[in-house]
Length: 313
Image (cartoon, rainbow, N blue to C red; front, side):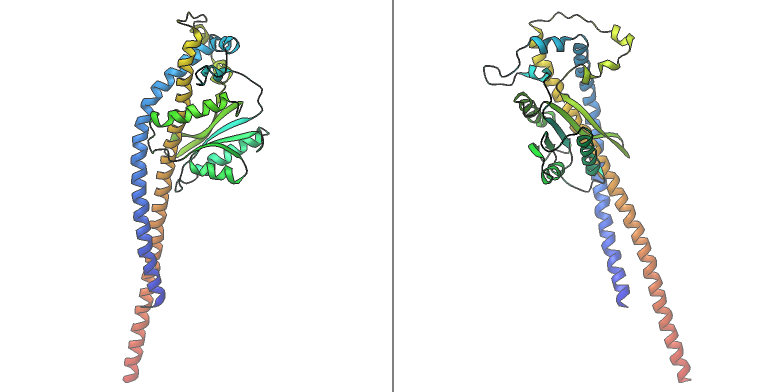
């Protein structure tokens, strides 16, 4: 068998093995996607409720009054005073939470998030001096670190289906940094899952919490009439906010990570499906090339035998 045919045969075997691997990875990613979608759909119920409560409070100007009257800063026991989450102050530094994956083989997932985040920084006239990065995922951490950005916090190894308990320390760290004025506003950047084939970039302001970034300005007049403008609070409005605000921050970050992980699994499944389909196309092309080469070799052998027989006659 000619050397060229041996090479084609080796490529066919190698491509088939690669196709088997990518096919298995597609099945794994699809299974993870189905699992996290069920988890995320159940969590959305809680997330929408806590957002509804905060929206009511924002519309009733309870957040504004607490921001003015509440004592913001460290409590006597050294814990973070969560009322600092609604404290407005001049923006000298912007914190950006970038959610990416820890590994590759996820198609354009990471590149889309990073490119859109860089556009956000550029359009906001920010630079490496007035921007700090909170990186959730190794890809984003490595990218921004190499380009001279200040990585004030990074978290690697987020579970395929992250739990609320796993994410809570991240939120506590983020709020503590805001309380210590490591940044004056915080934006969460991630890939929002639309469907298996589509994801879109989202950037949501997490801190400070205010009526402006709660979207209450978009309410219709009928919606406004549904809100009770005055509240009676027990024991006090600050005590209530001390409970509600951390829950809202946790729901926002946890929801963003769940959403991003769902998008990651969808992109991984799509990428592996494309790789498997491409492997099949390559195998088909190589097999055709191999059959043509073999047919040519057989034809050559028949011609040589016929020529030799004619010479003997």
